[in-house]
Each structure stands twice: as structure tokens, then as C-alpha cells.
Image 1 (cartoon, one colour):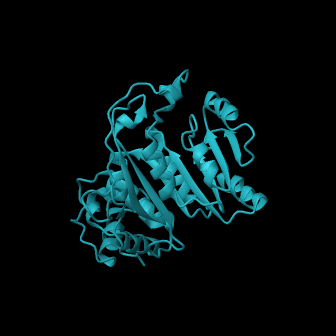
Image 2: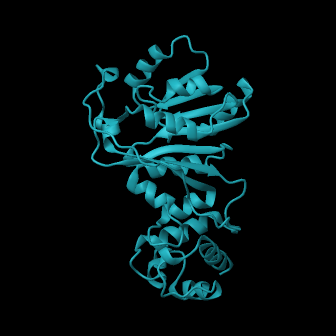
Image 3: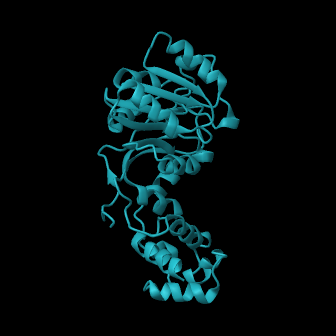
Length: 298
């Protein structure tokens, strides 16, 4: 059953900053636009992310996109062990120099979407005798959703995922399912986790300054999914189909489920007690689960 809890908000969410130009700490660093690199340079935001992440000396931290190490170094002071994954060899090489002599930091050159993070983190937790996994990252805007879904579905047993992303995406994720602000990603995330809004981050907190503002969310993984459903994949297929044409009614948008004809879809909606004239954004997670179960029986 759904917890019925709305996304939580931490107090003092907003940070105001004026652009200060290239900071001395980034001298010689060349951001790669192809990789969507915008480096966090605000100490207040950095400290807030770490404080709200729940990291302790019993935590293994998987950091995504460490860049120049703005989060990596202070995380290493608090966590039991840190594994940082970055796609840019120049960033990894720079971090090797900064973390030289630190025995609780491991650097991996690779694509987080391609890495077997379940095996990597499981082995590290066993080797270092750690109690929990916390995932932290400043996500590239252009692949935020695929990364979040991989982290949620990887079966790592993580306690939480604390991530920075474009504010527009964060607002969509934090929205309550069944509201106008919701989208397909809303239902997918809330199925797996509860959402806490940590802090809004103005674009001036980065170098180079991006064209949009950001926000930090913490996703606390549920022990059990928010709703019971017979076929999880079919549930999310229904959600995606419903939002594929979000301005259309469910009677029309569900046609994107190509394995089901119009009559079957109509009967499934009726069996689930859902008016085909409604739009996807008005459905609760429980209603989508009922629809999926009805289709599974068809």
C-alpha cells in the first residue's frame, strides 16, 4: 500500500549567490560541454548535500560524476569508503593526485550507465565491513532520468540516493502522483522511494554557469514498493503510455500499449474502476496498479 506521504521539504531550501567568475580552485580545469560538465563551487551547498545525505563512518558512498572532487574529498572525511565513478579521464587523473595517500577512496573511470554497480558496491561493503550504501551525485542534465532509474532498479540495497539535477526535473520527481505537476518519472520514483526536497541551487553556484537552476533531492529507498502489483513492468508500461500523450484521455493515450486492442483496454479500465475520460495525471499510483492487474488478467 502507498504510504500516502507527500514529498518532504527541508527547511531553508533556498541559496542565493552572485556569480564570482572562475574560482581559483578550478584553475586549469577545462569543462567538457559534451559531457555536460558544470562544477559545483558553493561550499554551503556542498555541506548541505553531505549533511542531508545521511552518510556516516559506517557508510559506503557511491559518488556519480565527482568532477574535481568538491564532494569527494569532504565525503571521504565522513564516510567509511568512497567509490567515485566518472566518464572523463582528465577528472579521474586530477582526483588521483588530490586523493593520493587516502586509503578510503577508490576511483573508477567509466560510464555509470554501463557499470555493474550492484557487484561493485556489494563487494566493497563486504571487503570494508560497512553497514549501508548511500549514493550521491551531481547528475548531467541530459541523462538524469536514465541514471535515476538505473539506481532505483539496480537492486543494490542502497539506503538513499541524494542527487542534484535540473530543477524542472526535480520538481517533476517530487510532485505527488495524481497531480498536475506529475509525470511518468514521478510514479516510477515514488514506487521505489520516498522523496525529500533538500535545497534549490541557483545556476551561479556552478562553473561554468549553466542555463538553468538546479535542485537536490534525497530518495529514501522503500523496504517494499509503494503499491502491490502483479507485473511491475506492465505497471510502468501503463504509466508511460498514459503520459505519452498527456493531454489526451486514457481511452486514447493507452493505445500506445500495442499488445492490447481498444476493447481489451476499455474492459480493463472498467474492471479497474477508472473512467476512460480521465487523464493520466489524475490517477494515483494505486489506480495505475489496478489497471495493470486488470490488463494482466485480460
